[in-house]
Image 1 (tube, rainbow, N blue to C red):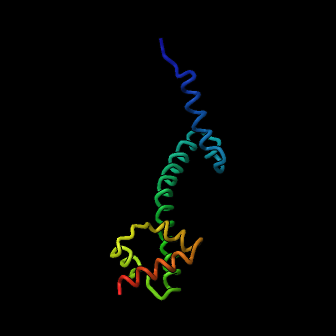
Image 2 (cartoon, rainbow, N blue to C red):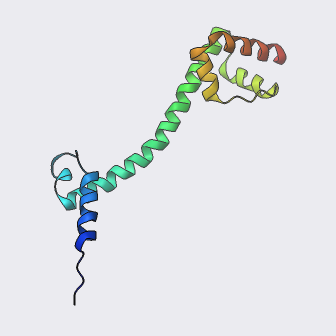
Image 3 (cartoon, rainbow, N blue to C red):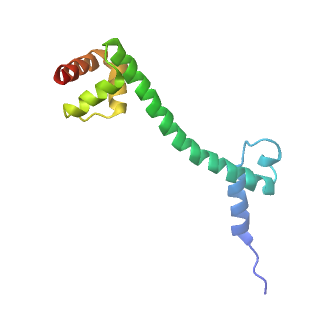
Length: 117
């Protein structure tokens, strides 16, 4: 006796079509095309998660650099001073300080430049 896919077959197709919902043209309606579209979408989704991390780090660096330049220090000298003085703060925290509490970051910059000199 032949074994048919039954509910598993239907559920697999249904879940894939659910993933393809909202895609343009046949990619959202036709099963074969939807398979390819979902595969490509997953590849882009994976790559975009990595790119997001990169772009956020870049944004943090820009914000820290802008705050440092206001105090007359370059970004690289500021980070070097942080390392030398043993202050362990990541770029995300520093950027948050630059946006929310500029006075605290200026105090930190002053402390770091004072130690470096």
